[in-house]
Amino acid sequence: MTDSPDKFEIETILTHGGRDPQQTRGTVNTPVYRASTVLFPTLDALQDYALPFRYGRDGNPTLTSVEDTITALEGAAGTVLAPSGVSAISTAMLSVVNAGDDVLMTDSAYEPTRNFARDFLGRMGVAVRFYDPRIGGRIADLIAPNTSLIMAESPGSLTFEVQDLPAIARAAQARGARVAVDNTWATPLYYRPLSLGADLVIHAATKMFGGHSDVMFGTVSATAECFPALKRTHRLLGVHVGPDDAFLVARGLRTLAIRMAAHEERTLEIARFLKTQPGVLNVLHPALPEHPDHAIFKRDFSGSGSLFSIVLEPRPRADLQRMVDTLRLFGMGYSWGGFESLLLPIPTPTRTAVPWAEPGQLIRLQIGFESLNDLKADLADALARYRGA
Image 1: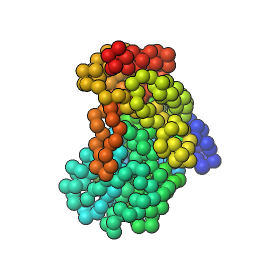
Image 2 (image 1 turned 90 degrees about the vertical axis):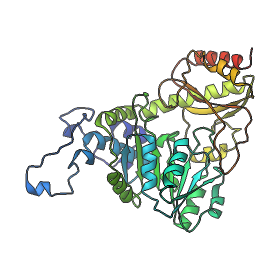
Image 3 (image 1 turned 60 degrees about the horizontal axis):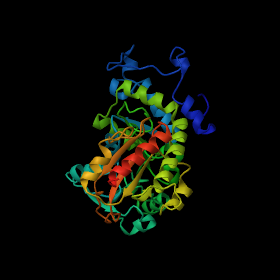
């Protein structure tokens, strides 16, 4: 890909980004480079700190292929890689905050993000406050003189509130705070936080980027202003990913556009099906017109992901157990973004700023690539068991 990525549409970037067959003996995919020690032919080369690969932790062509592709997709100045989504979140946050700072975090944040903020940043002398994910521009009233970071996640990966990111970013910029966004759900195919005013964008690449439920990975991309601090923090922390994992993510990215389109179509069909089922009180999917944040979703997103939640009428735990223990196709597991369908019962979501008001049992679903008729039958049978039918 010799031209600037700006000249190409996203499907072309996914197909060609990060590949240079002329530099890899004609191989279509960048090979797996497993290396710790890098040898230098001369003293001048040894002391040339501008060389891209000086030691295994500095990276290698396998890792660079992923970094370059994600950077192009996000329209970023640069990208760093991490061994998990949580590691990407922690690296991004630590690149911004200092002891004595204040962080504002969405109340709909991924639970490990909340845990890192509470159990680690709190210990380091960083105050963390939670805000209503639907606060929009009113977040300006919460920004303190020492607020250095606003941590957003849109939509929330359990409860699916969509945030008014442009309004939040304007308020942050006016007060000198940075904005980081977890963009795992929509991916840069359907949502571009940096173009909406964010400073850093984070992915649990374990999910949609990998796409096959066989890799742990994370990425952080940043603007030109924030990337030097991100890169420095990444190096100081010693964060590193293995080349085999990077190869799997690079391979997964090649089919991301096709998989996302299929996920979106199939997930919306299942969401609409569940709206008609007895015992389903609410379907939490921002692409549905009745979702309270649908207008913001339509304005800022160009598509949707494979994940959504439903709220079932309240029933005893024994009914929930009868529902989920004999599922035929939906597995129970904490991840998502793969080829298989998953169902996960969620306890009452943790809330600090605003109470969770939905009654009943929250269920999160990931829709994979099985037959839709078979998935509907599995869900219909499960819901009948839940109701005691």
